[in-house]
Length: 479
Ligand SMILES: [Zn+2]
Image (cartoon, rainbow, N blue to C red; front, side, top):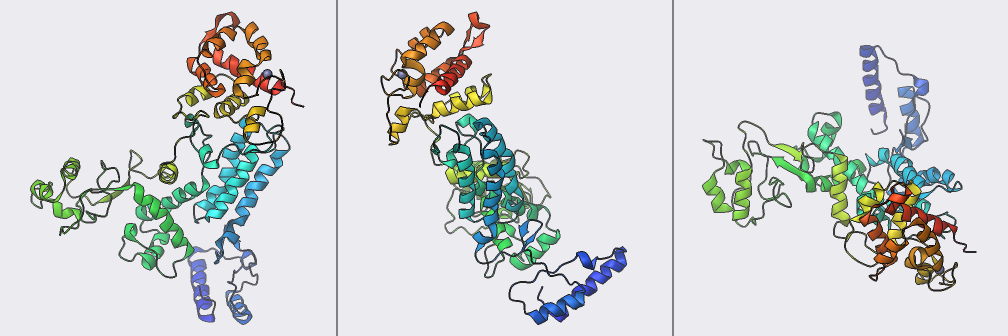
């Protein structure tokens, strides 16, 4: 409210009324007032006196959220990066394994952000700062890793079954959370919040076609950002058809973009109710055939019509039609990164089927992580480091012969034969090496083929080779 005598007295009156009616009392000692920067000393004094609240709140946060978002938004949200850093910092010295880091990142670093992301559009540079901090934590500080960031963050956000780590992209998640606000405004149009926003920003009640207005509050700008995402996934369930715009709205569930494909042209019809025969309550098939391309005709005629129901907004990406942040996140993620290819082989082949098999192996998570790194080529052996133009010898520290790449490391080095032979897998490895394959592809074949070794209590071959590989890699003397 505007800080002056009149407003303060009105507020005092409302509060008194509330206290009288409810029997509750306001504790003046626990109350505080937050003034914006341009309030004069005299006005402040006056307002405080009328309300009988003497504490001026100097904190710019309310329930952990910034109370006043100024022109420089990044400033208000910088503390988010600090919070991520502080959550990860305490763990650094303890040399968590990648498996432990995965859990920590998913549990803590991401949970910290949920609350603030629900309400505000976080500036992009802040999202980047947060992913940088998490990424630093993920890749850094293991003894031999030399802080190489092996993979871009967004690739780590692919699901584990697609070769990523299933981390969350904060920017996409933020937008998905904001589109939940849109869903709330639609589902609870009589809530206080919806009434306030509607009266100011969409008095016609059409939230889906609301736009930015001059002097829009940051809250509203945030809602509009959510609306962009929401618009890609909502779909009208046709009732009487009165609220649905034929050419602009999503109302064709079987269409790729949920819209009519026929161009608008000079067609005069605008809302869906004009396509429904008022007497029979069915689709006006002749009219529809006149107006639309065949593909649209078929799709429209498939939509069931239920008499006497109002049009309803549903969420397309959930079978029940109810909005979920999870599905909105995937929708937003696909929109942002969908045209990018999946993380690839080091050899550049297509998407791999091996990932689900890797994660199902019966080995500790550190061994699975080793497998994940190996298949991706994220192992700092000398040949790979040399390829990355990191100074140092590229030759194998064990046999001193040949370049130490992944294939040499686990399959062709003279020493590994001494490991694989007594375990009974050397012949099998040799057979796989008849075809010229890279180390990563060899490992993939091992995991894909599976099988067990009867002489060794039916231990899985993939499990054995991966675990053996982990010891070979960890045990080599690189000093
Ligand atoms: Zn060697």
